[in-house]
Image (tube, rainbow, N blue to C red; front, side, top):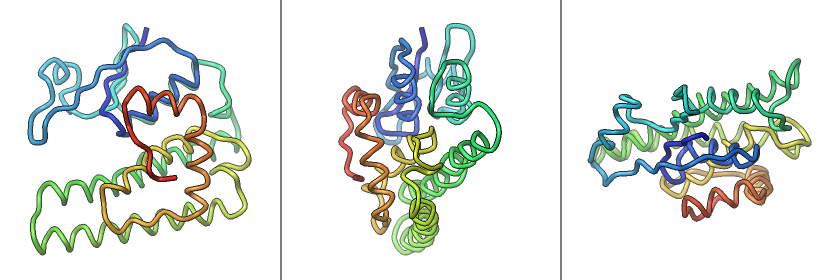
Length: 207
């Protein structure tokens, strides 16, 4: 059985949804702590980086979200990640966009909220929000003629994108367009996503 170490509503929720999609048995370990407090010592022994997601399969630990999703989707039959060719490359491109471009942009905004105050905080957040909105504009363009990021079928990038979209409620000024909201509404309607929202007790506001 898998063990998923997570924070409610964070990027680890995408792993949670994927595990539900694949019908795998797993247990959840919530490592949330009060603001300013270190992660539980037991968790830091597993992952000294202190971040989530972490997946334990009974033998091996996996500590990067995109790698975890690719591992799971390569292990079990599914329609969320094509197995080869252009279709796989395109699905991976959008997964990496979410994981390595959009996610870090939000992280900069959250970091400014934690580490700066006053005018400095305002300037850093304003600059970061501008960058985030440009990325959402890129998503809007991609979705002008596509139901999902890669066409007419949901892929793993759509799941992570929908998780990240819900973070906009925490940062003023982020604008998510109509096409992205439509995509998110379709993705979160999936039973796998609804089950994860319920388990993590997260309210979805992005769609």
